[in-house]
Length: 242
Ligand code: GLP
Image (cartoon, rainbow, N blue to C red):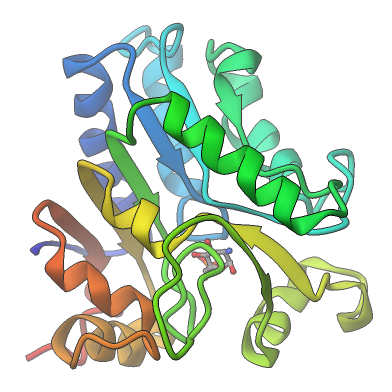
């Protein structure tokens, strides 16, 4: 595990975007595993800036996103499809047919998950997986569990996650209770994993995940075993790390 210590959210976002840009420069047709949430928004803004400055070309880039709420249509502003279009896809020259998210509107969970695993398989692996960190240690929507889930599956979101995500919805009742998420096995199979973490509210879980025992109760902790894991975190998030 390598830690890139940054001053603040802006600095974190810039450095994470620099790392991702280098992946694209080295392999123009790379497969990017992408994430949602507030942590990677600044990273996407910096990638858009590089594209606008003609320093980055997404024309051959392919992407697979980590997760999607079950039951939210694409046009719902809180769907991850909408988020990705709003924050990145509509602002760079990535081809729409090269972007992939689980189909949240497929009511048959088994079918949705199987189809998504086939999409991931057809890409021959993820070159760089971007991640945020949930307050309970979740990655994607892999919530604390008694075991690590390998492939794409349907999850029941924990109360903590529903509570954390309610800020984006009109009321807590509007937060979907289920989501489709890439499994921990797929995340671990990525050639490189980059996690962005910012803020004092993430300090405790960051310390637990990367300096505590590896356990499915803290899903992110498994990244301690990843051979090419880069944690890009700001001083506040790293404040409990000695
Ligand atoms: C959501 C997403 C995760 C994300 C997490 C943290 O639950 N499914 O992929 O990492 O929230 O979000 P934030 O970055 O807003 O703290």
